[in-house]
Amino acid sequence: MSEPLPQARADTVQEGDVLAVKVGGDWRITGQHPVWTDPVTDQPVRRLRLKAEGLGSWDSSLALYLRAARVWAEAQRIELSLEDVPVAVGKLADLLARKTSRPANPASLPDLITAVRAATAKLWAETKDLSQLVGECIYSIGRFFRGQAQFRWRDCLFEMQQCGAMALPIVGLISFLVGIIMAYQGAVQLRQFGADIYVADMVGLAVVREMGPMMAAIVLAGRTGAAFAATLGNMKANEEIDALETLGVSPVDFLVMPRMVALFFMMPLLAIYSNCLGIIGGLVISHAILDIPASLYWTETKSIIDLSDVNTGLIKAAIFGILIGVAGCLRGLQADRSAAGVGRAATAAVVTAILLIIVSDSVFAVIFNILGW
Image (cartoon, rainbow, N blue to C red):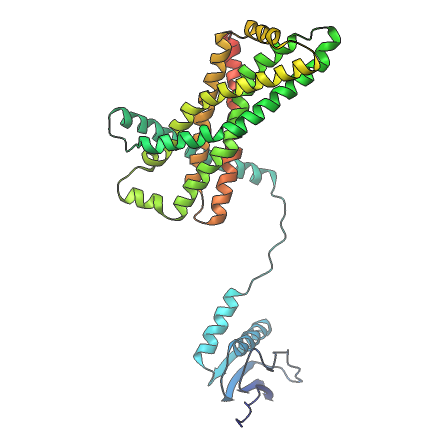
């Protein structure tokens, strides 16, 4: 049978104004070992001496003991000396002292000036990043017409399929339901005045000028904008964008522009598709609740909608597509190089895209009102 391992020990002896602690035996974190406690002495202590006698194998338990002794010595403002203690024990104690987590200070609300300064700095940084990306895209367009852009139509056609044809089901469903909701709410009010037929006017104008492009843009902001941000963020985390720059390939030409061009061309088509489904939704409710014949509904819709209304919606849709592409690509290029950073980038892309869509729609409303459209 093997002999039992000597048990860890720490004997404390006071020699005048020197407090001597003798450690020995085998120190194991999983076994029984002494824990530092504040010594009780009758005489003042000016120096603490930690000496190793008969020390066997050791691990972090001895380092923790030494660290606790150092903390006590610093608190008492006395000198600590080591005798025959392995140098590695001191290094491990220093490492544990640096890695020890300190309690965080309780969070408090910043003062008004600090909060305004931080918000202003963040807004200024976001504006600079957005302006830089827009400027690089403009330069990329110039290089494209000069035949110098590293632009691949194959990637652009693939993105057209993803943000165009693949988005038809969800865009159609939401547009149809929005048309039903608008017609139903309008019918409840208009039928009180015997103006049932004007449901077609209300639904037609609202869908063609506002709700069709808006709903298609919001759907693509959540579907395509987030996908763009996640894709570019993942490429950044895997250092693929850095590899492109090392090879002399512009990420804006190769990654950003195909996505923005795809959205620019697909958004007007999706807006037309959304307009048709929204009008059909209004037609269904009018026929089911107001007993308006489909032919009469369609005739009234054509009489109220002209080409300027359609063009207004198509212009908005094209600009919305560019804004969605800018927001998604910007957040993807800004993403942190981690999985969590990719998730935050996708979320920020959706929020940014919807914000830009709403702001630009309000600007369009003012401009079209001034122009009389």
